[in-house]
Amino acid sequence: MNTVPTGRFAPSPTGRMHLGNVFAALMSWLSARSKGGRWILRIEDLDPGRSRPEYARQIEEDLLWLGLDWDEGGTDGTGCHGPYVQSLRGDIYARYFDALHARGVVYPCNCTRADIMATQAPHRSDGAVVYAGTCRPAAGARYDTSRLERQHSWRIQVPDSGITVDDMVAGKVTFNLAREMGDTVVRRSDGAWAYQLAVAVDDALMGVTEVVRGCDLLPSAALQTHILRQLDLPVPRYGHLPLLTDSTGRRLSKRDASLAMDALRREFSAGALVGRIAYAAGLRPTPEPVSPRALAVGFDLAALAGKQTIAVI
Ligand code: GLU
Image 1 (cartoon, rainbow, N blue to C red):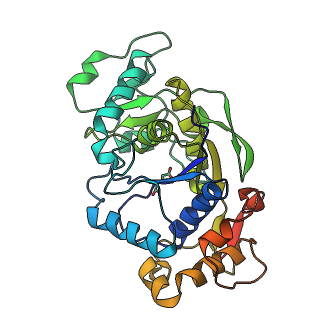
Image 2: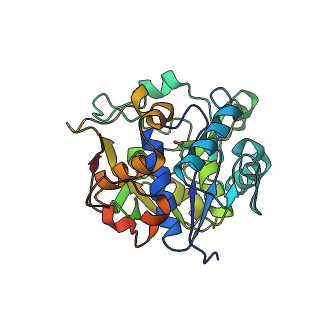
Image 3: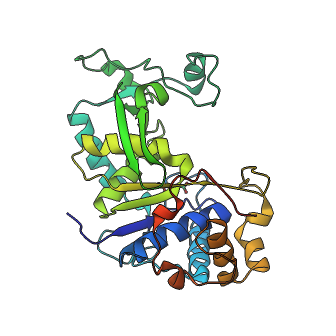
């Protein structure tokens, strides 16, 4: 069992970082560093259509500009838990997928997106898509092997009972995965490994003890907990950050070009940007420039506990 506090930042290299990524990276780095811990940079390039190596290198350059250094990982893959680029870890995911298969908790699914939409309850206000379990084999039965002849995805069965995430920021939150998500894809029909399996396995194998990231991934923490339990792998602590808003309380848009790193770097020095975020998050009384290293002294993620939003601009 890993006793060194270990955090990580796991960007998808599909574009330039924006303010939301900077906030997540900074809070994750501070949480690990304030405990004398380690920080890993993992490149999540599982989506071959959208990921590009040059974006990964740009993210590294932006992190170093901010003053956020990592002990392991990155595109050159320094460290003993590599490779740290997910597209190079397919054999590892295959091994853990086989373990789930041997346990009988995954099954092939032929449903198209249109099929899934057609089975949706008509009034889900949050727009979430819940898989109705159309291809799920009956309890105790084996899946229909005729499905294996066609292109199909693989889904993991999720329980119709509560899974509680004891989140460092959001507190204790219980999810019923069957009702809120449904059985979830762990391998796509094009053979690509799905985010949920890859992230759960990587965090465990890389010795990550704390996952600090945006609140949009809080339900995923329950699913990742479920996957890790099925694999008898350790579950990290999770800390899901409040949503960033503008001064009127409106959620920041990833598409707002003024919040992308190139614009932020034109407008701010690294210290000024970090100081501004720290002030908005209530970590400092004034928006003076500050280095991440100085901010790490006495930092505690619990300072954000209970906040649902942070007005940052
Ligand atoms: N790769 C994901 C993203 O960039 C983050 C995954 C995670 O932090 O678990 O949105």
